[in-house]
Image (cartoon, rainbow, N blue to C red):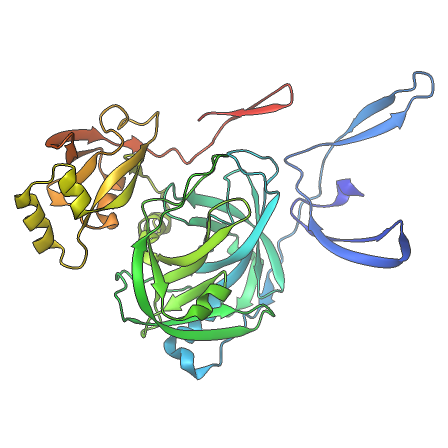
Length: 414
């Protein structure tokens, strides 16, 4: 029976428990043949052992037949032009065959947003796509479940981009969301569209209350964390009741994606991820190119100007920073540097970054220049003195690409 089930094909299994044989349960599962093989064990009465026979795994191919689907529409007039964003939300399920990179969860599920309907590109939180080694499925309109592939995982910002086969979808009302390039400002109106706990569409109208740089404390068991990212927060407390939502502006463009951020294996936080972080990688995929990033491989945190003055910031620099950034009086301090990066040994923990390529680093977004440069000219404060350094960036390799199995252990490069 198992040999006849195609790869990634949804299959219904009917079962019952030994304690209650009269009650049957139905479960939909999708089998993946690439991670394990089937063995048949037969008891040998002569030796008392179980003899193993490998069964050749040859699932029949699946004929792709387009299915017509209709996503639910939001009829709440308070949503305005943002109501059309409801037709961009899909469900995402991710299964992990192995426990690597400090992740021991077998599966994760949440929502994603379609950003390119022609290519089948979907943006999802990295709380859902925790590892590059995974099986991904997308459910559209709670009617069609299709497999997807991972195209990109951002090393710092909390998003991944996956892709589904558009040939599997027939006539549908899927609408790709338009991502805004603007930075949200305090007081901007916001219209969040989402699903409630009963999977009904709903809208929450609110305004932007604040933006701050996310800070997630490292855990004893190392795992990926979102770093060097500004998050958006809103006045309405209702948003904390939802794990996912699209926050649109008055023009119906997505200003940020309300999504979960992983703090520990059992604890999450929710915040808005600005869509401007997503656009560079998305534009590369739209050009049929693989996103190429370079990184300093550092983690920074905000530092008050009084602490910077104690670290050697001159009065002339203080005045320059205050005139350039009247909204926030702060700089950034390096907290951690990756050991195998090119910046290790050049930069040090607790270095205070004053400027990058001649521009004062006043916002966390000023660090994004690292993604497109082979080297950066930094002015830092160290031991109460300004230093000019040229620091090479490190190419992002996409994460873990090789595993070694030995004696029941799994080894990976750091």
